[in-house]
Image 1 (tube, rainbow, N blue to C red):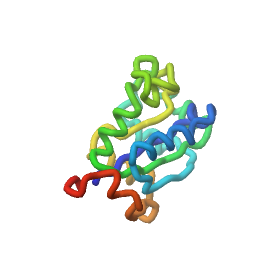
Image 2: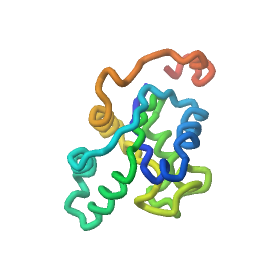
Image 3: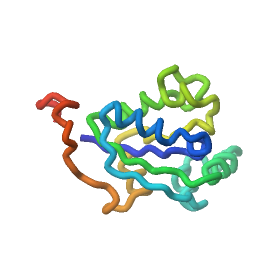
Image 4: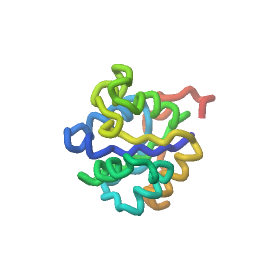
Length: 153
């Protein structure tokens, strides 16, 4: 089983879409193993977006991500990183396919509802950045055997 990170951005919080976003992941069968609300410091944003810090639009990103707290969501499932990325859609919301989170709720590249980890390695790094070890939980969902064939896990 793979774990991945989703950040529910201020654009989703301002538009009252948190429940809708979480519901989509749950309905897909992804297991919530961590969930918390937090403010993002300048330091955290500089680390998280280190690859963009020198870009002229970094201030826009930082300002946008600090409008409200965010929700950090740790999800678990088979191929969770890829599944979450597909469900989220293209980064530029107006290019994202209808039926994806960004395709249904976003027109922007910045105000695009969610951040998602882009690889299993980055998912591990990002989960450690946003969650302490004791904030990620392991438990067997009751419906687990109805989500996967017994030889898939």
